[in-house]
Length: 280
Figure 1 (cartoon, helix red, strand yellow):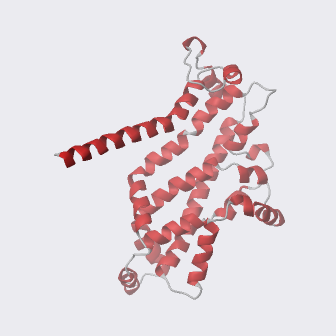
Figure 2 (cartoon, rainbow, N blue to C red):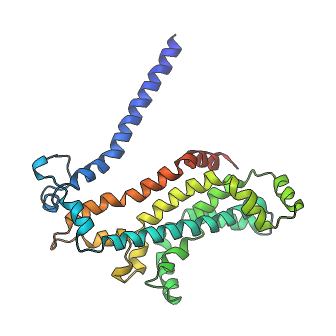
Figure 3 (cartoon, one colour):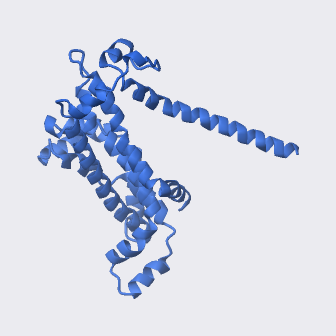
């Protein structure tokens, strides 16, 4: 009985802890949502807060977002397209590389995989200047290709796919070859169906990174018509214009695509993360 009571107490403590953590995570989103109904001048004067003053709240900011003269939806569309292309290309290329590391033996395999692991420890700020010079020499500045290309073979995604696929039995690959399938056929017809959880997990993580990416696009994008949502919203932050109404309601809508992405792939997300963590 004492042991049962102790386990019950631990369970209750964990529930309370997770509830507190959930509230702390959701609190900024709630503050942002409440602020979206307030005038932009309130944000300038009082900042973000939990004060709910019904007399000061209205739908004016949302009306401005959908009917006002601004470039918000252009920035939004740019970010959606860029994120979709980035996620698809990164998953395709990184899954190829991860599959190669997991399923084949070739000269220099250990050295190349060690390089992938080393890249994981290098922050973007360290390689930013060489990447900038490289994109400039290739005449890719002010082009979305310069945002996508340097990270299409993403080290952490390659590592995750490799860990996920390392336990695939060679007999499965041999069976595909006996049936006359090419190596590409084996990958697309046998391996990809097995990787749905891994693709879902990496789609969410890479989608979040691409959607929230700010520093690198800031360096390579020059034209305002090509701004992503993060760059566009940043231009609204200035002490001389009354742009905070659009900024706050635009920030609320910027959360929606990531939320939709998570809901779409949540079925496989936990399964993929757990499998990638324990395999290998």
